Image: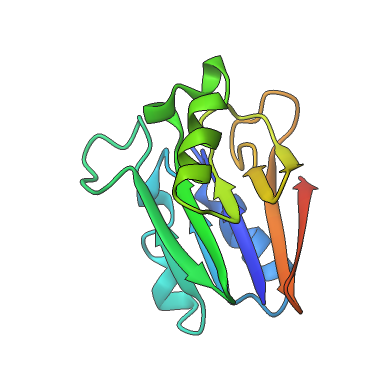
Length: 156
């Protein structure tokens, strides 16, 4: 199963579209906030891909839960923008929340800094920013195969 993870497009939704065209065999897309409106039209263009979104701190007109979870291929994934967990000050609260919820993967954004870390059974993944990265623009790919999780940051 192939998963793409985007965050913080900040008006540069065309970069999400370009990544979707570039990647193959996509099953699921997570968008972790800060301009959800940039991707609202994409489910119509990609009807075979399932899209999951949460609002970010800049999504003033988007109502919805800031943290959600889903199980895909037997792996529990929690996804959030991250501002509600103060991730710019560290990920301790976020990781504690994910562990208490029994997550296998925690996805977050907000910092614009990409990360793929494995901590004793928990994958911590921040795709960075697709539109306003601090060092470079990026997104994440996750492949879940045979019970294994393979995460990668793609630099743009």
